[in-house]
Image (cartoon, rainbow, N blue to C red; front, side, top):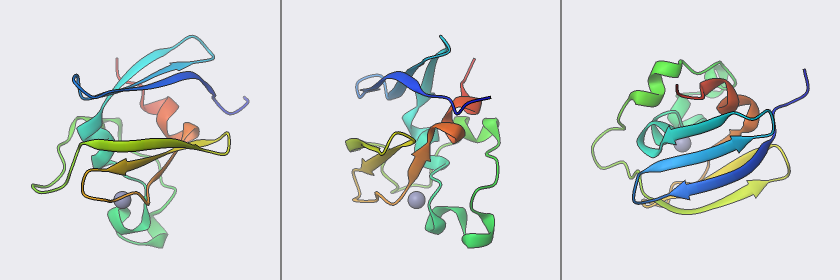
Amino acid sequence: MPDPRPRSVTIDRPAGLLVIDWQDGAHCEYPLAGIRFICPCVQCRGGHELMGQPVDPDDLQQMPAEGVSTEVVAASFVGDYALQITWGDGHNSGIYGWSILRPLCPR
Ligand SMILES: [Zn+2]
């Protein structure tokens, strides 16, 4: 199967959602708090050996620790394979690959 690709990506700040319409027709609304919780960077994953492991879809419903920002300041595309998000506390090292996000589509 080819890598999933988004047709459109929207940050709905008032609703606290990352909204992605995928080319396969799926419409997915990801809670921003959960997106921050699953931040795939080395620091948040707790080490290189834990990088690249599949994310538990239940983690998307988790809340980050107190003081961890769930406000999106900026979001930009990384090549054609990922989204980089800059959070309100300046954290921006998480690269959210489409291959991470597509399987996590909340129902
Ligand atoms: Zn992180």
